[in-house]
Every structure is written in structure tokens, then in C-alpha cells.
Length: 442
Image (cartoon, rainbow, N blue to C red; front, side, top):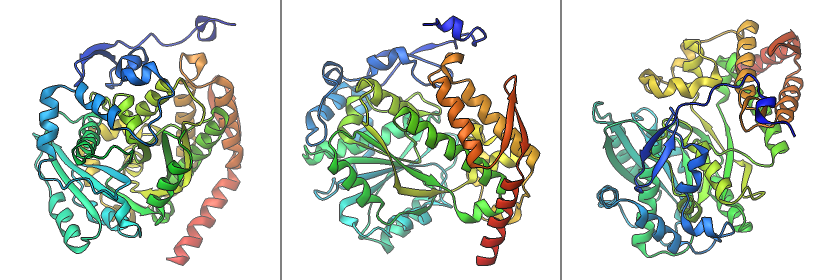
């Protein structure tokens, strides 16, 4: 077998790591994005899972949740108690808690909640919103819109939490939110496992059976720890932005093939769900994460389970449609879509990006820009292959990229890691037909 050096003679120098103390009081290694170094995964996981990777959390999990919460610092536990002091207790009929962080989401939150109202099994799920913002940013009208929805839809269980932060770390926000759900579960005296879904506050569509599908899927197989649901964008946004449409479709094909070849999905903050017990067992969210906290928690589950097959599943029917503002903002800024979350962290303007912007920012498809998007995707994932010192098998990357290009009817070749597109005429024709069909329908 070749050594890592032989496989990757031009690999980048290792990123400089920093040591920080987490809310659990443990010293761990983090990279520049605040993500745990893999060498710290074991330290993040609870002793009960480390000692027993087959730990069953599918039915009862009160003990492991107590172990997790007791591991947190007294100061942090006090903050959690204050966060939930005015929240109603967890209902005895709630099987799914949908966790939504909301930062400057006054424009979107009412519409998002309205989609959950379309689901018929209101007694089986709740929506827990953590309205949050840094101390340096003024509060918007998110709270008023949540209150308006609660008055108009009292049958939908909506819990509104509020907290300000000194620094904006999505990992910390998701940790407070999810841990608050566990504190409410513990206080209710419920020992049975519940499901915790991670959604965003800019929903534009959802399968009305979303909650029911997740509940039934987890109930049918106790070996499932987490599920990633399907995500997409609206027909309107794809029609107005064919470049985004083509790029997202390519990414979806690529990741679908990668999942099938490697045996499991990566989790996604827009649409994932996990058992409350496994969340506790792997040590919860990493509070220092600036981006990628959703992917990281999936990696922690796999690490704790010793890469057990099928502990994480992809369920397409548990689908949502999310606001395309991140992708559109990237296009309008000249940033490849594959890098959209890096800009999203620092660009506050994206939170003011209204849906109406779609109508005024119509963009024709540019083959030259699409070629740049494809090249950015190729470079991004090539840099994550084993041959470049990463985690993605070289043969999986090559096969997934090639098949995705063929799915898109693109003829191409590569030379020195440069993707040269020879013909994309069929793709262009397909995009034109898509736009014409949907504009007629509108």
C-alpha cells in the first residue's frame, strides 16, 4: 500500500490548529473554521458510547441525556434553564421536535411556520425556534411574526426562545437550541426517545407528510441514528436563475452517486433529523463551529458508531424546499455556489435578500460562468480526496464526477485538473425548455 506521502506529493501543509475549552470543560483541537480536529472526536463523545459503540438509544435515552447534561458546565446549565424558563413543557404526545435557529428572519419566519401548519399530525410534533442575534446587532420583527402565527394557529405547537450572543457561531446557536430541547425533555420526566430535526427559518415548501415520514422511518428501524432528507429550491428561483438550476442539479447528481458508492449521506442543517439519545451520546454540537456544524455532527455519529453501516440514511420523501438566497447571493457576487456558505458567514446583506429580488434579477444562462462553477466543484472535491490528504476515495470522486456530467448531457475532458467542456448544447436546450414551460404555467 502506498503511503500518504506517495499518494499526495503535493498535499497542502497541515492547517494550524488551536486548543480551546468547550462547554463540557474539555480541551480540544479546532481548525480555523472552529471545527474539531478528527483527533478530538473521541474526547467529544460520551463515555457510555465510547465503551459501547452498539449503545441502543432507540427506545429509552433518559440516562444518556442525563449524562450529557451533567457533563456541561454549571454556568452553561444555568443559561439553558434561563432560556427555557417561560417555555411550555414537552407535550407527552410530541415525537418530533423541529429545531430552527432564526437570525434576522422577520421576513421569512411567518411563511416558514405556515408550511408546518400544512402537516396534519400537529399533536406529534413541535417547532422550537431560537431567535438569536449578536449583541452588536439590533433585534428585528421576528418575535412579532412568531406571535402572530401562534395566535392564528394555536393548534401548532410553536416554542419561541430568545438569546443574544457575544459572537455569531452557528455551532453555538444550534447547541443552545438543541440542548434546550433536551432540558425540556428531562424536566418533563420523559425517558422515551424523541426525534430532533434541524431545519432553517426560510422554508418555501415541505412534504405535508414530512413529520409522519420521519417518525415512521425511525420507528421501523432501531439501527437508524440519523436521517438526511431531500432539499431543493422553488421552480420560481430555478426559472429565474438557470445557472443556479444547472449547478444545483449537478451537485445533487454528484452527491447522490457519492452517497450510493460510499454507503451513507452527510447530514445537512437545512434538513436532517436524529434521535435525541444519539445527539447526547456523541457530545452534542461543537459550540465553536463557524460553518459545517451539521456535517461535523454526522461525522461524530459515524465515529461513535465505529462507521457502522446504515446508521445514517437518506430519505428523499422527507423533502423541503428552502430559500435560494444563499445561492443567488453567491451568483450576484461572483462567488461559486460551492463556496456559498463561506460568504454567508461574513456577508450580513444575505439576510436582507428578499424573495422579490428574484423577479428583478433575471439572469440568462452563461456557458462560461457554468464552466467556472463546474471547475470550482471539481477543485473543491478533488481537494478532499484521499490523494490530496482528505476523506473522499479517489475512485468515488472520479466516478461520481463523470456520471454527473453524463447525467447533465455534458461532453468534457480534463487536462492537468482543468475541466474542459467540449459540448453542453443539450443542457442549454433543456434549460430553455424548462424556463419556457414554467413561464407559460405561471
